[in-house]
Amino acid sequence: MKISLNQKILSRNEECAKKNRIFFDEHGVFCLNVISSPGSGKTTTISRTIKDLGDKIRIGVVEGDIKTDTDAQKIRDAGGEAVQIETHGACHLSAEQVYNALKALDAEKMDVVIIENVGNLVCPSAFDLGESKRVILLSVPEGDDKPIKYPGTFAEADVVLINKIDLKDYIDFNLERVLADIRVVNPDAAIFQVSATTGEGMDQWYDWLINKNGAAQSAR
Ligand SMILES: Nc1nc2c(ncn2[C@@H]2O[C@H](COP(=O)(O)OP(=O)(O)O)[C@@H](O)[C@H]2O)c(=O)[nH]1
Ligand SMILES: [Mg+2]
Image 1 (spheres, rainbow, N blue to C red):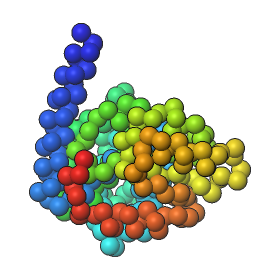
Image 2: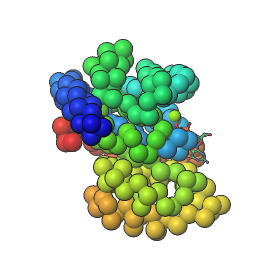
Image 3: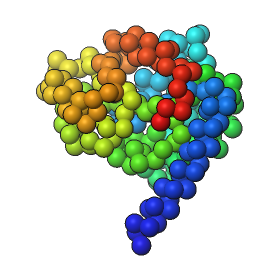
Image 4: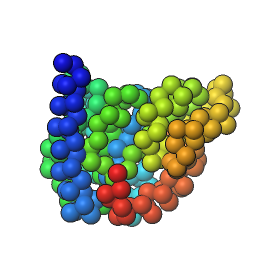
């Protein structure tokens, strides 16, 4: 019974993800689904990206959280447009929630829509939101064992941002191991070492975003 209910939920989600993908294609919107543990730096990375690229590309943000609109407020403080989805306990966003949020965001006016998923390294990876590309964040203080503990999540990434790289000399974090472990499950993902607070490495991420923007929306 449990398996068939899960299948129904996932196939309903898949239908709505298709609608989102059509919306993105029709409006020329490049959409990113950003997934990570709580606190690894999603909101900080998105805010800095908006501050640094806001005059080149129009970026809208869909924020997913179990409770509060604090992240949407931070995006607005950074000069971006944001709509908050409160999931009231659900550990991931669904394609339908994103579909409804896109209307509130005026997404057809955007070049890029960034979805900050609910902080969780497991559940969000099972739910296609219709995104063009998927970004997984891993921050240095979380530990270097995350790619081998959550291989399915890392396998689905188009980009892995290793954030809080400014802390690597203060924490027991084997960067070589992390890079090798990601490569085992995902030989093709672009991997960038960044610090969303100091700005280190962010230019490579921006180059990727600007070059991919508008291209291959239906790649997933
Ligand atoms: N040292 C350092 N701290 C960071 C960095 N990025 C984010 N933080 C801090 O990590 C905490 C959580 O960041 P936040 O963006 O809210 O994470 P989220 O829960 O993934 O959205 C905040 O206190 C940020 O200031 C970074 O690159 N380096
Ligand atoms: Mg956040």
